[in-house]
Image (spheres, rainbow, N blue to C red):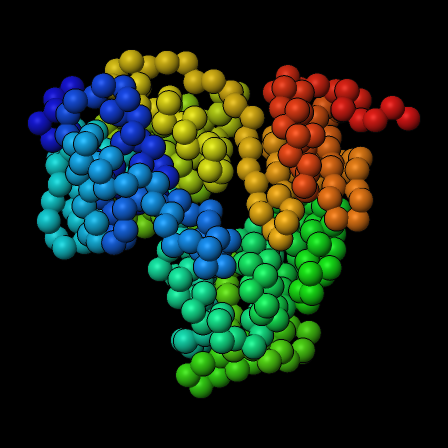
Length: 393
């Protein structure tokens, strides 16, 4: 592989940082350039809805500037990619300049979904970047009541953080419970209980019909006609892969960037990693995993393949977590909302549940039970019968 142009990584988060780090660990000596539309060095996003929002820290940088300098990694900030020509192997940046590459890594992550019908008011916010988290924190400091739209993981974490700051919170979710589409209604009911115990007004089975105000938010009207006073609205209805800049490139897209099982896309010399990438699972289906721990696993497989040292991808058990109040909700495996759920422990706040599909353990979810969750990893990996984990009758 020619190293005249080197490897260009587009993105400013964990996937970009881990890829650059893995390249140097793999003794790649050519040029490595990270291109990001943000003004900050690559940083960690999970704390944005928690520690950053609660003003416990603003430092979420993954690697200090010295790391990039010592490893001869160029970081170009505030000038993201706008298009790519895979024939000439050039990326066009926001300022119109072009950057040639020998190998291109797409690590652009996600962009938050918005609600186009909402008016342009100062008090309507989404949460995806460090700057947005800090801005939300400042507004929340003087807010009387916040309406959080969407009770997925981000919405629940934001609601928990705001309550910890003493803000009155209404959590609105069209589904029957928080997290219903991800973990099912039974676990969703336990999450509802957790938030209600902390004073959150949880409104499920209802959406937002209208947001009213002049310059700032004043009222939120729900689809059941309820009018809520509010001076701040946080939209947390999920995210989509950041692939707009790839339209017309010829790179195949389908719920993210389509890749083989080592991150190779449909275009020569182009790879994708992290939340934006839909990798082929070893058993044959495509899967796009939005979990923090997945990125390092992918980098350890993709980088050797990029350098011509392809290794067999291993099958790992997906893992993610969500911190809400003093309860860490952890998940191992690939639970689905329509699985059979066995709640085996529940003390009124903490809980442990197993997910059964076709008679085997598909996943485990625990709230405040880290040891008991992690010990089930091998059972899930081996497709153990559900009877192996359930308590004796």
